[in-house]
Every structure is written in structure tokens, then in C-alpha cells.
Amino acid sequence: MKPQPALATTAIHAGEIHDPSGAHIAPIFQTSTFTFEDMAAVEAWSEGESGAYIYTRGGNPGRTALAAKLAALEGLGLESETTAEIFASGMAAITAALMGIARTGQHIVTQRVLYGSADHLISEVLPEFGITNSRVVALEPAGLNAELEEHPNTAAVYLETPANPTMTVIDIARTAEIAHEHGAMLVVDNTFATPVLQRPLQMGADVVVHSTTKYINGHGTMIGGAVISSDRTLMEEQIATMIRFTGGVPSPFDCWLANLGSKTLPLRMERHSASAMEVAGFLESHPGVVTTHYPGLPSHPQHELARVQMSGFGAMMAIDLGSYEAATRFLDRLELCTLAVSLGNIDTLVEHPASMTHRVVSPEDRAASGITDGLVRLSIGLEEAGDIIADLDQALREF
Ligand SMILES: *Cc1c(COP(=O)(O)O)cnc(C)c1O
Picture 1 (cartoon, rainbow, N blue to C red):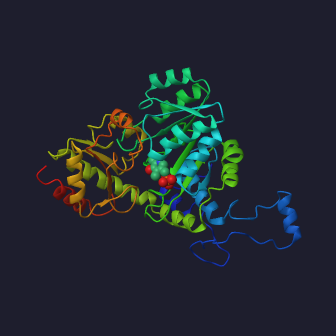
Picture 2: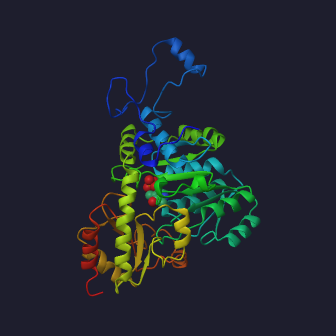
Picture 3: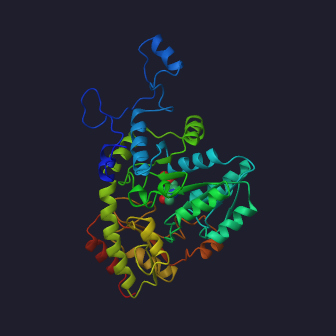
């Protein structure tokens, strides 16, 4: 096998379009349809002899380029070929992955609390199509084994790690092993870690899903998603079909933006992680902060697992300030950091999960998963770490 280029090189060069007109950066193919030269070209296409683009719902060069790049990043180091399909949102990607894998009468097992909309999809929407679900708090091996024995019709185990917003780390390799022993596929939402810090396919996961809205684009300018796998049959027969016929396709411009953003992903993740480590150290030592949840801190319950499973700890963290009043006072005082949902942008975003991203989760499930009223989630940006800390410090005055 030819030696594979390193991650930073792959992010910049994989899948790039070398346009015949000589444009250095790939153009945006902002077109709904593509022309045929003549009827012979139509015949070649209908015989399956040409890979021509026909109509942008079916495919667009910029979408193909982004898919190739993300597949190369998630597939780095894998022997088998990895492919990707790009969607109009992370939720469209998650829906396609789960509806592509699970059929009516089948079951999905997940951790207790997921990204809010994924949670809603699995607990409220899929059951309407006869796809049931059950939860195991953090997919601990004994609990997961028991759950899978109780539900032999399980088609997929679905997980997020680090988990949103409490930063619980789940063992991907172990979960994949248990899922496979029971004939289920493992689907991992890799949005928080990105392929730069964690590559689930290498650890035995069957499918990776992403909200490219977050770190992959990185600049907060679009909404998008991806499904990535080296299971060719699944990708060709289920996922590609799902995008074509349910139609959750991204715009050519959004693909172009995500592609441009992803070129700096390795560089950004390195700086995001380094700054987050500094910020987490500051927050943990601040007397006004009750708990700091960050996988990079030795005090994090799964710190050792995070060290093995991830090549960096990322820039997502949560702090518990003890009460809703304290969280509100802190959030209202922030000047540099922005109060907003979403994450993975170049600037620092801070939010209150109980009233924002996890408002739809029942109070019982929030309590069971540590989403207290005093919990604040931070997505550490690329500003100078000292400036981020200074802003957090002034917001924590007299705490
Ligand atoms: C944002 C997000 C999603 C959903 O993605 P959209 O692009 O908003 O549809 C799914 N999972 C995680 C972990 C996310 O952060």
C-alpha cells in the first residue's frame, strides 16, 4: 500500500477538484441540472457507463469532493475503503443512518441523554415507524449486554462521545465488540471530537455521523451533515438511496463552505484543544466553580479512557455553578464569550443546557444525567486563551 499522507495534508488535498479551466480553488457548481452533449451521452449514462452528473439532488461535484475529503479523514489508517454521503444537516445524516440500518420491528439502544434533536428523533419520531428504543445510562458493558439480550431485534447501538453536555466518555471499541456480539451495528456521532481527535471506524464502529455545522465547517456559516462508513453495501444500498429519495441534500454553496473550512480542521483542533486545556485548568481551580467537566482533566472520571481513545481532548466542556441564579449571573456578565447554542466555531460560544439545548429532555432524564440547572456548556474558540480566561474570570467575580 502506498504510504498515506498525514492528516493535515489529507484535510487540504483529499477530494479536491482540479478544474479544467485552471481555477486553483474549486468553483461552486451552483446548478440544479447538468447538460448532456447528445443522445449518445444519455445512452452511456442509462447503460451505467458514465459517472456523469445529471441533477444536483442525485449528485454535485462539490458534494462529491467534500464526501471524499471526509471519508479520507475518517478512514485514515483503515485498510478498507471508506465512503461518505453529505446531507443538508446533521439531523438529516442521523435520520438517514438510523432509517438506513433499522427496519420496522427493530430496536435501537442508546445512552441515556443524546443531542436534543437526535434524542427526539429516536424517542418520538422513529417509534411512529415501528422502530423502538431503550437507554442504558452511559452504555456500561454489563448494562448494554443485558439490554441487547432483552432486545435481540436491536439493529443499532447509537452513541455520542464525549457526550453532550456532560462530557462523559464512552468506550467505542468495547461498545462495538458488544454490539457485534449481538448482531447490531455501532453508529457513533463524532461531531464533538472530529476525525482529528478520534476515529471511531478504526475502533470497530460501523458508521460515523457528523454535524458538519460544527467543527468541520468551523466558522458558523452553514448547516450540514455526513454519514461515513466502510460498509459498502450499507452506503450504496441504504444511505445513498436515502439521500436521493428522501432528498435531504445540501446546497452546492454549503458544500463549498464546509470543504473550505475542513482544510484547517487539524490546525484548528490542535489550538482548540490547547486553549481548552488552559481554560479547564483555570475553571477547575476557581473557588466559584463547583465542578468542571473536561476529559483532559485528570479529575474527569474517564480521563484514562479519553487518553487512549482520543489524540486530544477537544474544546467542549461544562461547568456546574451550583444554581440557576449563579449560571444566569455568570452568563449575563460575559462580554467576549457569546451566549448561543451550537459549537465548534472559531469564537467561544457558551450556553445553558437546561434551558437551551436540553430543554426538550425531561427533568428526570436531565437529573439522571447530571444536567443540573447550574450547568453551563462552553465551546472554547480560537481567541487568545488568556483573553477567554480574563472574560470568564470577570464573569465569576465574587463567586
Ligand atoms: C449539532 C449537532 C447535531 C445536529 O446537527 P445539525 O447540523 O444541527 O442538524 C447532532 N449531534 C451533535 C453532537 C451536534 O452537536
